[in-house]
Length: 268
Image 1 (cartoon, rainbow, N blue to C red):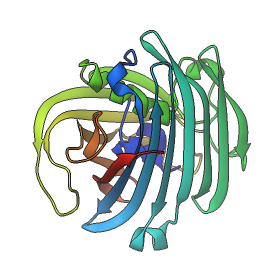
Image 2 (image 1 turned 90 degrees about the vertical axis):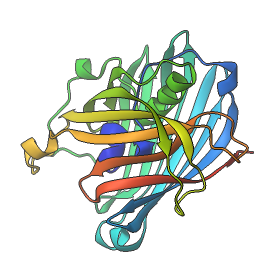
Image 3 (image 1 turned 90 degrees about the horizontal axis):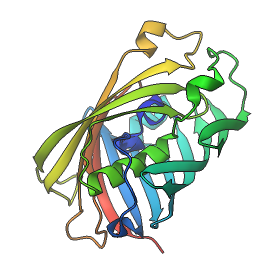
Image 4 (image 1 turned 30 degrees about the vertical axis):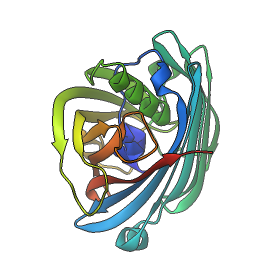
């Protein structure tokens, strides 16, 4: 996947990043589908679709994205990722993470399964031997990028705010994430999204600490990647839980991507 989804899912993962884990609340149940457009340099560069199914005991989430316009001509990407997990008291416990599609010039497929909270890479094609290895102990207790989205939604829903730290592992890259609560903001109206109004703002920074490509500039790869997400119930839709309605994130390909929720709807 693109770096922002692996190092951070940002609101693009959905400029979304992990914050405080929280117990699943009855208000967080439901099935819904969220469609986002990402703009860079004033042009639409990517579309993302997230499908979430939340129950008091567990969750599943599917995120698909594809580049559009000039971004598609320069660096085509089309990826589908999915994760399942359960709630254990105050923790989110991933069960499985799978990501496959065309990105970085090749068809790629990664699959992780979790045992006692620790990820095991069961499939990685093609093998990326040109990365620095990541020790198993470094990934213990880490979460995948999509489970991180679920953690954020529950954290905001339960009123815990955004302040937290987490380790994110996608099978290739290991990142340390710090999220901070930026308080309440007013999301302004725009013709790029029908959703606006008061929102909880969460800022985050992600540092890749493992799985650096050998041909990359290491200092550049380790450079902090910043982003933000504004989370609110999308008024006028049938979705009644807080979701990211606006966001932004740094991206090595796009520069800075601005994310807009364009549709929120129930999922059959």
